[in-house]
Image 1 (tube, rainbow, N blue to C red):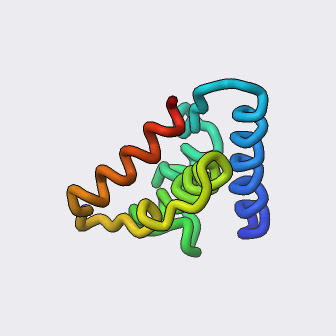
Image 2 (cartoon, rainbow, N blue to C red):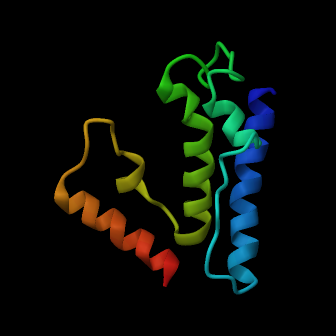
Image 3 (tube, rainbow, N blue to C red):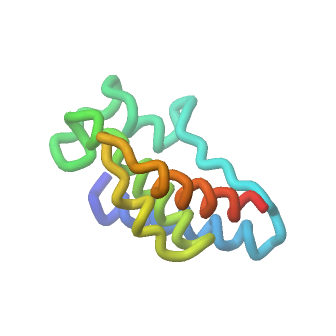
Length: 107
């Protein structure tokens, strides 16, 4: 799968989320288990890539994160405070902001 293919799939997730919202649904599941494509990138058994989507754990989850953030951007707009989240954690204030925005999706 080329990086262009990955980009297309990421954008397709976002566009699908937009159509779901426009159709009146109030929930979206980003399924990354049971041998679906996202799961194959997460699994070291299947993912032997040597680019930014393989190797370390951070790289294995990159595709899922890109799909997730594109989906959120389509639903609620720019999420710079959430996109900056690091493995070291966030402040309580930043977490509350992210939680509030996520809750808005569910409401």
